[in-house]
Length: 386
Image 1 (cartoon, rainbow, N blue to C red):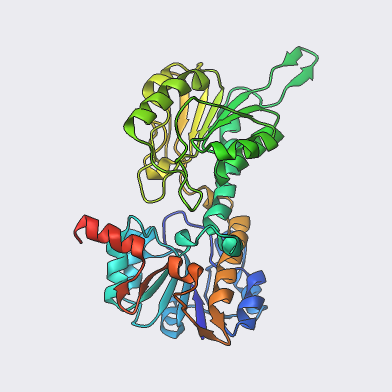
Image 2 (tube, helix red, strand yellow; image 1 turned 90 degrees about the horizontal axis):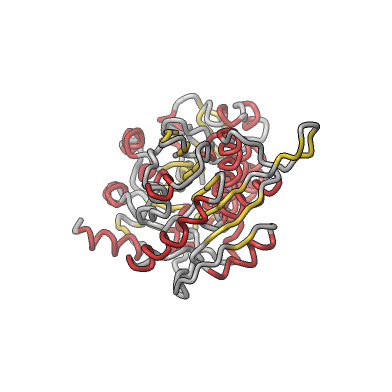
């Protein structure tokens, strides 16, 4: 069975789905690896580093598609709607595509792949179970986003993060509030603490309180009834309107008291919840910074403009997109490891076996045999009337 690794076409996407270090386990599983020339260059992996590990490097993208039974990408069609449509004509019935695909919102893309008879495995849908931890690409990339958000905020803030004893006196540490204590939020907490900031965090899921405290941050307890705020995958659920209203009211003082607010709250398949309103921003001290990691999903801050950094009443509001692509070398290493682990789970003796009794396979498989088979995606398609 032949595995193709192609160069990413989404604007600004610098990651790659396989790195030289992950070729050995793929080859041991019986896969022959074909790499499009230049696929890893932006991440610091020249063609010869793949060839030295036994991959076949070819100059033509079309040739990779023509020769491969399986294609691994960072962004498949669903997560690359404009440029990705060009690849649709290169795909053939029976091929399998694996990568981020935005399956819960890009419903048309799943149906287009089904129409061509192409199988699709979505990295976003890897279940959060113990067996699949090493395949969890969402968590890997969220780790990078949380880390990078703190660096961006620190560079934007007109203060230093740590407390310092200087010849001019004592410099007080910066105060950082992290909203959302998932993987990105926890990494943001850890990174801000390493830089010397005083950190507090809030999450609707009270179960993360110990994790926040273990990193040296204060957990912000709000008197809200959120006992059912977590789904079976460990993600936050959407709150009802009354709870959201009370949450915003109680967060107003906390937002105003901090120099930096980093927001990471997300609900899979839905628009990001607005946690920081215009009124909250207006209560912040001039020079303060909001770094919104949910910008790609509409933003946790009411004023966020995706892909831009704006100034509103002397407050800097950052809406960064695709932060993992700004650290492509390590992001590619992490993502490639997740991909390789999943493929080694699915491929044995050079043959891919899609066992739908296996939770990992069943949950991540979106399209198979010309049909959308993932129940969550099917339900969304039915609800949308597609």
